[in-house]
Length: 261
Image 1 (cartoon, rainbow, N blue to C red):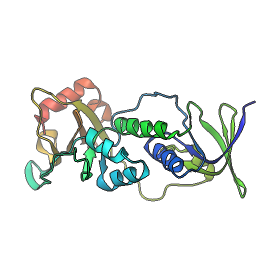
Image 2: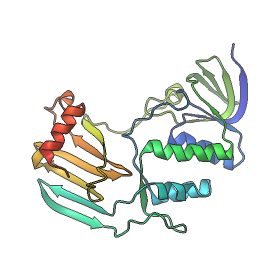
Image 3: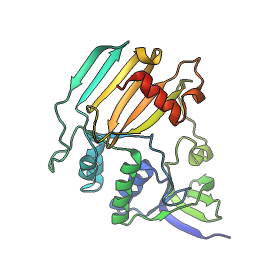
Image 4: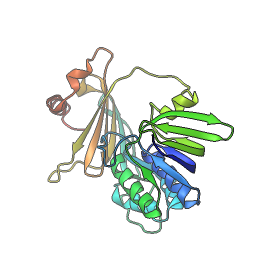
C-alpha cells in the first residue's frame, strides 16, 4: 500500500505549463506538488515550442523575478520574417531588433527550444522550493464536493482541494474528469526536422515561409531559426507517404533538392 498525502493543489505534469503552475502557486504561498509520470531527466524531443512572446516573458518575469530576462538573454531574436509564394516573395518584415541583452526591457520575443525553456523554468522552481514527484503516473481521479482524490500507479494517494491538469494532449486528468476538446481537426501531415547551424557558414536570421515551394514539388515549407540551429517544417501532400521523408538520409535528400531557405 502507498501513502496518503494532502496538499491544497496537485499539478499533474512537469512540462512548461506544469512548471509555471507550480512556480506561481509557490510564489503565492499555496501548498502544492507537481507530479510527473516520467522520471527526472527524461529525454525531451527537440521539435516542440521554440519561442516565447513578449507577453509570456512579462508574465514569467512577474511570476518569478529574473526568469523572463533569463529566458530572453539565452535565446535569440530573428529580426526578419519573409513569405514566398511559388518562389516569389510576397511579404517581408524587418523588426530591426536583434539585441536580447537589455537588462531593463524584455524583447518582443526570444527563440529557444522547449527543453531549454523547461530547464530555466525548472531551475526557478527548484530555487523557489517547489515540490516535485517524478516517475509517478496518475491512474485514477475522483472529484467530489470536498475536493479531489488522485491515485497513482505506485499506489500513492493524493488528496487536494484542486487539481491542475498539465499532462498533455492525452491527459489522464482530462479523461478522468470527462472533459473533451472542442473544435475541428485536420488530417494534414508535417515532417519536422531540427538542424544544427553551421558555425563557419551561418544562414541569415530569418523566418522564411514558402507556400508551394517550387523545389519541393509545391509543398509548403517553413524555416525557423532558434538558438544554435534551425527548425524545418514540411507539409506533405495527401499523396505523400510520410516514411519516404523520414530519417537522416531523406532529410539530406530534401536539403539537396531545396538548396536551403
